[in-house]
Image (cartoon, rainbow, N blue to C red):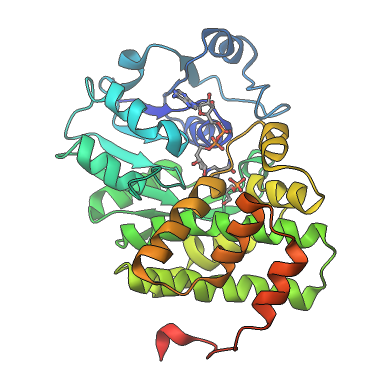
Length: 335
Ligand SMILES: NC(=O)c1ccc[n+]([C@@H]2O[C@H](COP(=O)([O-])OP(=O)(O)OC[C@H]3O[C@@H](n4cnc5c(N)ncnc54)[C@H](O)[C@@H]3O)[C@@H](O)[C@H]2O)c1
Ligand SMILES: O=P(O)(O)OC[C@H](O)CO
């Protein structure tokens, strides 16, 4: 019997990657918390809560039995929001084996510790074969069959090539990278700037402004990466500029939608509640601002957005203050 693939998490991204692999011919077991939803998925082959109208392969079986899902799986994809990621991995540890491939798809940071998800995997499963999947991957577009590319990052080359062959299909490509930190950092930071982009779109800004915002976001991300010892060149790839573009321009992005709602005058609580799904950028904004202050990293967009999102500062006042800053060099991290 060939080994199956496990996916932890019943949300939109866990479901689309589980289904890609099932359609590629693998037996896939997807773990989720809610027995009613699991039963519904198995009966209807749809995940109506997150991806209505998306037909799931019969090779994908949902279950609340974590042991059954993980035991003897060849690879385990963890697609759980960062707020619950460590908790779920701690539950999973009882059945994880060192030879299994363990891949995070989560683009967030642990509150207060500033640990990315691969750090958590390394701490909880010290002898694990660990990777990170990240890129411009709106789940709802993948569900519609739009051609999509992602990056599998690991220092374990065999893991990268195995994940590439498990995931690649007629409409999905996975490129490899050995820069786990850079890939993961890009996917995490871009959510902050998607909130800023959604907010500015709601204010009716022009195309010049949108372009400036995305490009200065990349400059700010790169400055942060250099200060934290990451390689900013990785941001030139799919997991950096690629993901920044899609998340800062698409109303399908949950982070963009939170920003748009804020720009319409809604409160943060209302924006997040109406969304009903995870918007990692809200916590990431808080954590990155703290890091920027602690390590004295110049991040005017993060600082300004924080004031708007958490301190109710008037957007016009924040923009006016930013516009009065002395413009510095364009691509400063390369100087
Ligand atoms: N949706 C996308 O387009 C997309 C694309 C790439 C990466 N991601 C990343 O994937 C991660 C997961 O996102 P998503 O889109 O699947 O989120 P989602 O909001 O669609 O779903 C989250 C899922 O996690 C489950 N969950 C939350 N806490 C849990 C816990 N303690 N135990 C068990 N299950 C729990 C929820 O029940 C839900 O099924 C995020 O970090 C996101 O950044 C999402
Ligand atoms: O919907 P978002 O804002 O969480 O973005 C989803 C993906 O990260 C886009 O690549």
